[in-house]
Length: 194
Image (cartoon, rainbow, N blue to C red; front, side, top):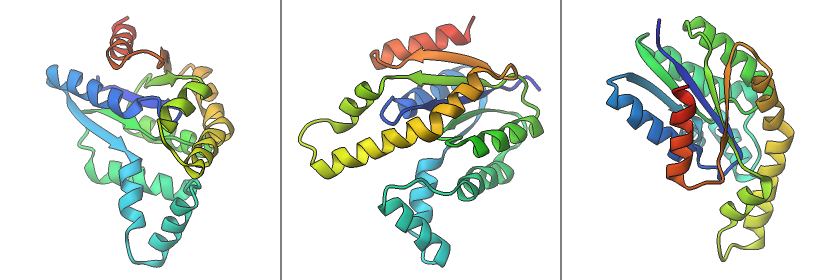
């Protein structure tokens, strides 16, 4: 299998979603089949359901806390199992968010036959991310929520980034996310083509 897996990771507000969309468009130009997965929308839809699990998940979201690993894995793993045909590139956004998820995702990528998946680290400083997320005219509650999300990144996601950086099974691309959208995209494509 010559298909590739691309995993986007970085702080909230770093532009992952925008860069995922741009990469998907680039791959489509090459007539590649794409399996694109972002977990944020799946969690929002799940939290709107009426059963007990949906309500628990909704309460976690309302508190601004991170969903448990088993639920995160369920969201992306079930989507893979139900939709992967075997002939597509993977483009993942929001997966993984914790170390336990990273090792399970590693097993999934190996299961699907991917060799040397590409980790695209959207590298931005905490200050840059906070300023971008805050925007103008935000309330103190919003600022506190932003700080909570960035604290969560430092505690949970940063170790995952280092695990990928030091894992020889992956190709790690450190991308300067503090550029214009176009400059970030050019840097990603340039490093992918090396």
